[in-house]
Structures are given as structure tokens and as C-alpha cells.
Amino acid sequence: MREVSAMITEIGRVVAIEDDGLWVQTIRKSACASCSAQKGCGQAVLAKMGREPGFIRVSYEGHQADEFQLDDYVEIGIGEDVLMKSTLLVYLAPMIMLLVGILITGQLTTGEGWMVLGGIIGLLAGGYLSRTILNRNNRNARLQPILIGMTAKPAFWPLDSGENSD
View 1 (tube, helix red, strand yellow):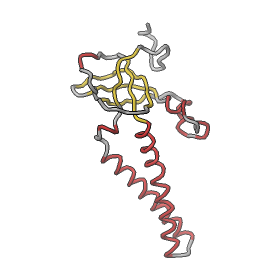
View 2 (cartoon, helix red, strand yellow; view 1 turned 30 degrees about the horizontal axis):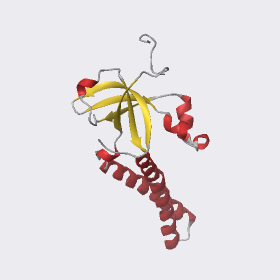
View 3 (cartoon, helix red, strand yellow; view 1 turned 135 degrees about the horizontal axis):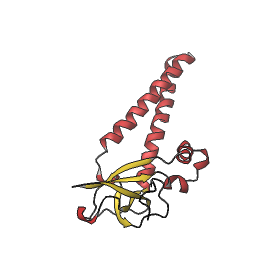
View 4 (tube, helix red, strand yellow; view 1 turned 180 degrees about the vertical axis):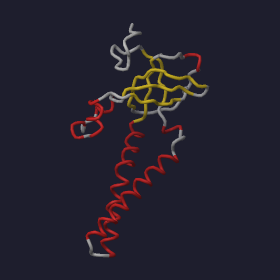
């Protein structure tokens, strides 16, 4: 089992069981609730407008497939360091490349239109760079969410349709 110092955890419902992992349905919210920037963040605003489910695949991490059934509730987690590094990559790489594009075109020409074009090209290149790095590390086990274990059904699960409430 991996050792992670600080984690962001989430409760989810098992929606599929495979030989090498579970598919877990979650409501994206806990990171927003603990974040100090939630008033100025677009993700927090979207999360408040509608609680859309997310589907996450997690490996068993020392558990066995026969321990779980569909509609069981589990706790999953991801290291805070992984989340922070991923966020920095997704947001900072495009912004840095935008500035690099502006600076390079500013050295080559004095026209504002060319500098804007250089900035746009830099921004797109930064987005492509982020995407490439994230795709390359997509299967890295250290960067994946982990299964912490079974948990009780939450008092309120917003995705319940009402017909199978306890």
C-alpha cells in the first residue's frame, strides 16, 4: 500500500467492479469546501450550480474484489502534493508559455498584433505541453487516487433517486 502524508479524501459509490479496480461515482465538492480561494474560483461556482457526478477508477490497494458489491460506499483519496503539482501544471504552464510567446515576439517585432499572436501561440503551446505531460503520466500509480476502504452511506447522497433510500 502506498504511503501518502496528507490526503484529500472523498466518499463515493461503487458503480462497477473489475478484476483490477473499482469504478467509483463521486460528487465533486470536498476540495472546494476546504479551499481558501473558493469565492474567486470558477470550479467552486460550477460545483454550487449543480452537483454533477464524477467517475473515478481506483485500484484495490491491498483489498480484494470480493470485498465489494455494487452500490457500496467507499472512501478514496489522493495526495495533496499530487493535486497541487497537477494544478500548477495545468494553470501555470500555459500562463508561462503565454508570457514567453509575448516576450519572444516582442524581441523580434514591435507590432502589438504580432505580440498578441505570439501570446496566443504560447498559450496554446503551454496547454499542449500540460496535456502531453498529464497523458504521459496517466498510468503512473503514484499519481492515481487510492482506495482507503469501505465506509457507511452518507446521511445525504445527492444522486439518490429516492426509491432505494434506507
